[in-house]
Image 1: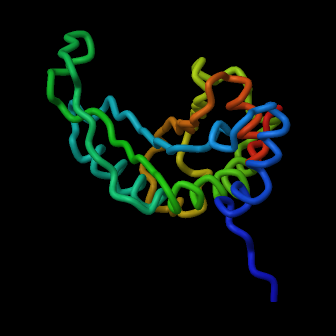
Image 2 (image 1 turned 90 degrees about the vertical axis):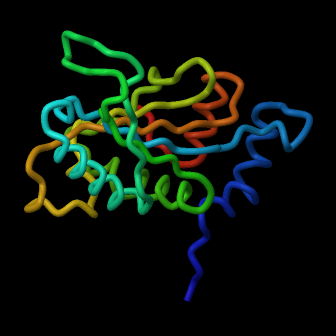
Amino acid sequence: MTKMIDLNEKYNKEIRPELKKKLKLKNIMMVPRLEKIVVNSGVGEATQNIKVLDKVMEELAIITGQKPIIRRARKSIAQFRVREGMPIAASVTLRGKRMYEFFERMVDIVIPRIKDFRGLSSRSFDGSGNYTLAMKDQLVFPEINYNKVERTKGMSITFVTSAKSNDQGLILLKHLGMPFG
């Protein structure tokens, strides 16, 4: 019976020394690492119907295994009927063991289930080595029950790294297993 090695252990034992050589870094502590994963789902309909936000929060909790927090509007926008302080989104910040478990599920299960998938775009980096992936619907997650979904809702998943540049972030995420096209 073989014990499955977790991603954090693999990163520390194999990937980190390899990245140190590849990036020509002097110190092992300079090697970029995955710091957190932020899953955010904006719900514009919540301004008229607050029950929609409850459903989104329930689904995010199922997907991530952690209770989401409500995000409120910072300022009023009349065209969208949004007032300052109104609940408009739900988000979850994953760190540590849950972050690595979620990352493994994303790479191994969720991303291959995306329709017409040909690899992730390497243009979604923010300039600081952080990568944001936009999902059109929550149905690609196996935890979601199709029968209980009233309508599909999109979400953005941001992989925050300690990389100093987009190139370092790309190399790190490739070594961790992200399938870039």
